[in-house]
Length: 212
Ligand code: GRF
Image (cartoon, rainbow, N blue to C red; front, side, top):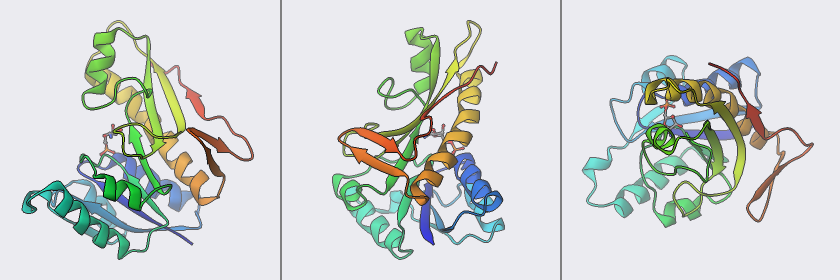
């Protein structure tokens, strides 16, 4: 049974998509805990109501990033995870944290990386005038929003888009690709060669949506 710990900071809709997929597809995995750095994160209620252990660790109560991350590692490791999933976890992580979970730490970023790392990705996409935008699930490495990419989903950008309409279109795809990537991990189908992620047997690592 693969043990998964999911970290959130807010709404938790990606966490929800993963939990639902795990239940609907009867994954040989257990969501051992959902942990938030914000005690009032809305996603914690969903996890609780699904019988998943929840915990929060308020980063504002720590003097610095290193102290918070060290405590977070202790908390996470109490659940003995094989995989740690960042799902809208709005914290920059220290190298110590990232290295501790090397090869078993996934993140979703709302852009077609390596384009638009950082925050406000939908605004960045509109400003740049790209006609295609999307989301990426990737392994986390020390460089922010970099690391081997597991799967990407692309969506069109329309002339009348706002950051909100674009975010909505991208989020729908996030809810498809994140559970898929986690499932691949659980089924041991992922290998990493330099910066490339290979899936065996092969399966498309790019979803192209034409959604309006
Ligand atoms: C998502 O767009 C995710 O890509 C980004 O933050 C947002 C979190 O949404 N990292 P949710 O909390 O999963 O609903």
